[in-house]
Length: 274
Image 1 (cartoon, rainbow, N blue to C red):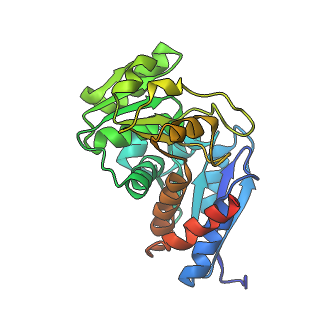
Image 2: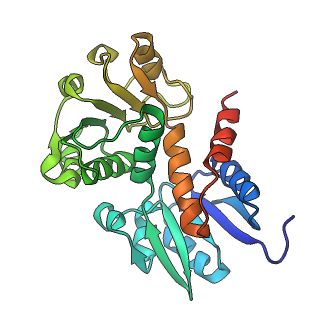
């Protein structure tokens, strides 16, 4: 029951009505017995800083930030994590009290948590190939390098964007091509290719082989054409569900100080796939 004591958290973006986060977080709050509620708030492009100010004014307990507001949210916060400083983008805002907001980047850590869950894999010493150079790709690149990846190769249509993204991995980063996919231990699709009814693929599945781990950050659909092609060849291939659960669990704990009920969160997402 929502009362005058209920703490409100929200996700902001444009668009945002499609988000699974409200169902996921509300299930988590219920499981943990917390008097919190989570809603989706559409915020049009150009008003990201205003959403941060609204969080201060309204006393929201936490905020998830999606496109196109991640850069503006990072800039408008009072404090920023090391990852946010490196990426210039925030995916999670924490209310510190007294009107102060801390910006966090949970995407990269969520990816690593998801990879650990799905493939029982640590990226330390591994070769990672990332397809794409946008926000999600940059978070994955930075997180993998920070976690000790041996090499992070960025494959993108635009060379300048690839170079900028690869720089986030420091000495481990480099710009590559689709030919480099075959030599990677982990191949990550961080593009929107294959989303929804799109049956195209981010790279030729013939470049993939058994022994690799393939991750598509998309979860709409739950099995993209690329994942289906990889699984047909017996390759371990996973969608973005575990990353979503991982980053949401991190945000939940940052906001509440309570360990996230991950099994309850995962059940919500898996039920959506049925």
